[in-house]
Image (cartoon, rainbow over all chains, first blue to last red; front, side, top):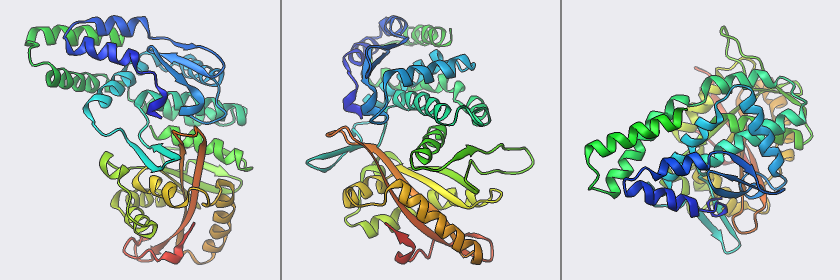
Length: 191
Length: 180
């Protein structure tokens, strides 16, 4: 699954992060929206994703976008969540060395660790799919549980992890610069 | 994010030809996640830590016994057993070594999800008479990075129940309780 993400933007963001500049925030702001590129591809935070290769064969862009809109219109702050999940994706990609891909044989490679942002997109897709298949029957029952339990308060945890990563990669960033970076990211994530 | 499994599972069940709906939970009692036809189903998602999740045992039997009896899974089943009217557990093991192991050893000949569901319901009907087993459909969905195909591998486990405390007896999981 990880192979399906165009990582060019991830690299830009990471380089900004390691250098201690605030370009990270600008990048995320610019690229926040989920965009339908064509029938089979979406872009989120600048990463081009082929929907059918990260969720299920028959998934199309519109299914995902409908799911995203369904969650957003029901009061789930998708933009905040997506920034948080995306930062976690960036963090894990660089702090965990193993790719998660297992070579079963020459013709089968499987990745059992979906990037966090893909998990969020999967939630959008499967919510929409359930709603479609069952015409919304009892959807609200489970949906309320989703709303109550999504990790909204995980923003601070994400930031702590990102700081660890900055410390790891760039020893020259001083305390005040880090503080400033964290404050800016908090503002950017929450609004 | 176990909700992803729950919504996905409800959709897979529909693809397999069954009818389902979510069950309303209340403060006073613990309810199962889904009602499929007249059967109450609890959905669980098992996640290994990163390293263990990609290290597959050298043969399928070791892998099955190794993973199916780890505390995390047995505890998840114990939690499911607390749910009112429980008939069947569906356990998503995609993020475990077993999820990968079942692909490695049985990628072309495991039970289809629909067959696993049908057979599991037969076992549930038998088990209701004697109450000796907890029936679990173990499944793992993945997309092959090479072929980009979405696949679901499934099998059924009859977990022996200890009568004293109505818990899964994880010291005893005979091979003839696993149907691949």
